[in-house]
Amino acid sequence: EWLLTYGQEHGKSGDISARTSARYAQHLKQFGRYLVKHKKRSGVTENPFELLSFSASEADRVYLRRHITEAELTALLKSAPDYRSLVYLAASLTGLRRKELGSLAWEDVGEGWLRLHAKKVKNKKARLRHPIPSSLVILLGDLRKGAIPLTDRKGRPIPQYLGQGTGPKAAVFPCIPGCETLRRDLTAAKVSYKTADGVIDFHSLRGAFACL
Image (cartoon, rainbow, N blue to C red; front, top):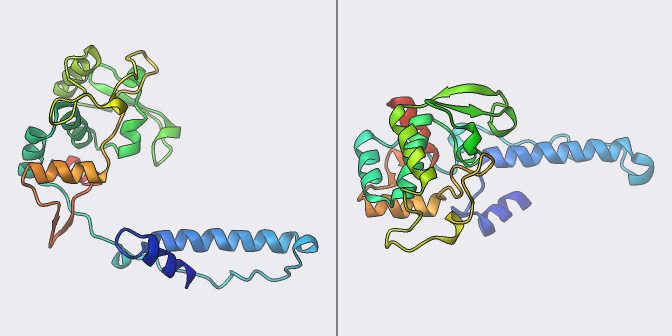
């Protein structure tokens, strides 16, 4: 009951996802086992959360995600500011998730490949040669040389993008656009981020990689 109330009060869509609920239930069960293990101090002899469970089925998702189409992606890339357009392009050409893109350093970029570290990818499996097209290699080179301006749509410099440097350890993408920024860029590109088929979010670019 507390979880549902919390979701209604604080959730952006008035609810929390089934996956989040299941994760909370798992943590509570683990906490209950800890209390039982240290029953001399806690006074707890039975796990009060043992029967707590939530369904993590896809049917209970807060929203359904849809893939961005090739035409929609093209419109987004043409409309967005140069830096954000490159981030969206990189996501759609590499299939990397938002955090994985943000973890890339310049020393991880080679001629036609990216080095993915096990600690920085979701499946915890390193990949020394993640292939990328030559066109993206050229654009990344332009970004490192400063040929791609780190500015917003009106040409104003954005503090989060600046001062990161271009050394081997510096981040390739000092800032990754969030959901609200992506939605504004989609609106500017006259692309509906929400349709009957679902919602476009940053992960939809990974879906575009799979489709393209």
